[in-house]
Amino acid sequence: MSNNINPNSHTIIMGAGIIAIEYARILRKMEKSFSVIGRGEKSAREFQAATNVEPYLGLRAFQTHHKNAPPNAIVSVNIDQLAPASEMLLEWGVKRLLVEKPAGLNHNDIRGLAALAERHGASLYVAYNRRHYVSVRAARQLIAEDGGVQSFHFEFTEWTHEIDKLPLSETVKKNWFLANSSHVVDLAFYLGGLPIEIHSFISGQNEISWHNKSAVFAGAGRTKQGGLFSYQANWISAGRWSIEVMTRKRRFIFRPLEKLQVQMLGSVAVSDVVLDDSIDKEFKPGFYNQVEEFYKESSQLLSIREHIEQLNWFEKMVAE
Image (cartoon, rainbow, N blue to C red; front, side, top):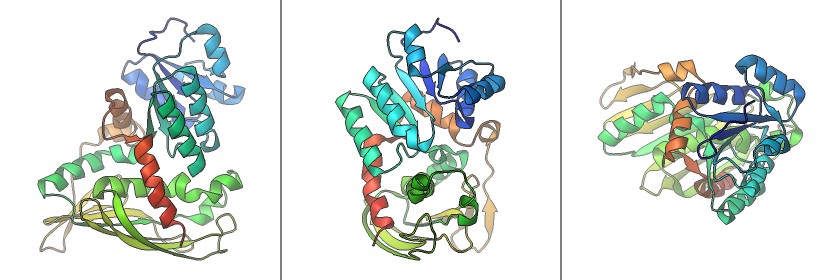
């Protein structure tokens, strides 16, 4: 730990888990000044072993050495602690936060966090890293060349047999659409445009013990730009995450999301788009580009206010 920090550019990483380690690797490569705040001694030891950086144990320990709040923070704690940790930093005076998706355990958490950020005049962004995949950046450029999106389809099927085994609270699993499926839904809307209308259907109530309100999802809608979209997911059958985006000239296929394939108008052939994705191989895909955008305060990041707008559509997708 160093007490010699630049108060005008320093960044706090809140959390000392696997994702925090990835952020530390990225900030080190970017030559950014940072400190790490963990909560438990075990995770702190593991973080130090992986990065050679000793975390502070708790925000108060950091505040003991540093009176003024640094300007930046990256929040990468467990999902049920995302909103409380972010709120502490906002109350202290941190003005720019990148908070791991989905920024809260539930919609009330997120809306409360957005209101607090607004009261403090802070910029808060939600770290949906899939927006920043090399595949997505390439597709957005090609889509623009084609004149924009005409329609799109996406699937957010979850592997419940694997989720059953995860050591997560029932509350997290109950909100699994927000906690996990929203990653692909956010990306679909980022590529195709936010809805102005959705017609949604669900079934499979009581099929999954920890998500008894629904297990099968389908729907369709229209975006602000006039594009049409459809979606489906079946959490009690086979499937995977995927997105397909159609322009007047091409179909862009993300299956898996890190990979980009193209089908040209008038052809049944599907070909891979060659990408320079070395940065997505060196670090967790999308993370490096996302952090770069954070320091630029780029419009490609999802602001907490934009996230609130998305939540309105998320609610329609998981309820009849």
